[in-house]
Image (tube, rainbow over all chains, first blue to last red; front, side, top):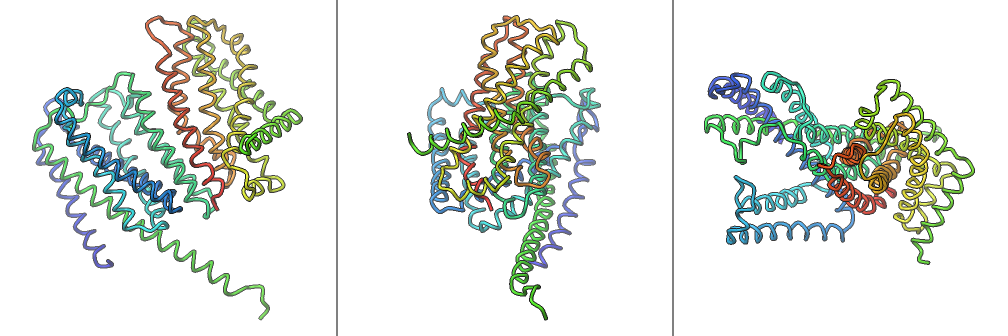
Length: 294
Length: 227
């Protein structure tokens, strides 16, 4: 483990520089926007990485709450299995019935429903297998902190691009507003963690993460009615993207994922060591009462 | 009478009696809301048409800020003499306690709103052009949205350092969808444009209320017993 970290660090640095080269040199120049569009190769991978990290944080928070009692843990496991099975059945049914297939948003396939369900359940059980209840809370801290960093990158690079292209720095559009609210929720999450006493922090933070996850879809819906100005998703949605651009985008995302993984890993180890030190100190304090005269 | 309802009613009447004798929460909320209204009217100075457009936002921001004052006192009151610890070791159902506190806060904030609305109408020269009765469900649902989350987060923030400032930091980001819906619904009703309707916003607000009330009830016991 100790050797793997610097190796991964060097590989990530090389990969990031290669991705930068791809974004600046190899990717074709966008016809209408010009070179400003290249910020897209940072903006979008950061956004995907941030959302992924927040999603992991949500799963970790749920697990921290659920796994404290055996019965709720069982209920959660079966719910996740049901979700995976139901999405698989639903995608098969939708694929067979042409009327339902037409009702799907443009660009999505019936199989993507099954994929989503399987990914959610798979991530849940992967985290459950490899992290104990205490470790899952450390994972939640890590992903929230790193997620806020990537989300900040998204919120800074967005206006930088918007100013020359839209002529404005900011607009209260669906995606911008929901991302900003998501950022606000996770900043308040980090503040709560900092200001509460150590014993209660994990439970309260996990509860707040669940509230935040309930909140974001509602924010999205409540602003959805206003017309959206953000470009429609070019990947997976109805839009089109030059395959060379897509290649550069995906390479950049991979590089960003490696970088995020590296940062999360070191932050996670730091958190575990910090807790170990705290526990040891508490134990030592118990074993050697200072009040005894020597 | 079953045990949960008993606990709930006892706590509720106790809180109302305390508030009736001290009038701490109501007085500070009222004065705070009054200040917000006066400060806003100095900073905007609108005519009748403009004020219809912005009044929905102003009034709800004033109520949101003012309700934080009452919400902060909900649990802080129970810290004296370790009442909160007594609640935790008692076999009384936690959710009954939570509902009693939430309903109590709801009553206080509704009283505040009933007293402030006439003042608002006078200060901002308001006249409702849409169906005015719809303001009642909007107000009830919007107040419940603020109060139910506020009571929950106050139970969290009361156990952190710098607890008074913690509550708005936790509450405001989560309340954004409720605030958007309440403000939009109020503005639609005030302006009374026949092409738009407040129905969508009322439904959204009701969904928000149901979702977050259930989440609060599901998680309150865990948060109360966190140690």
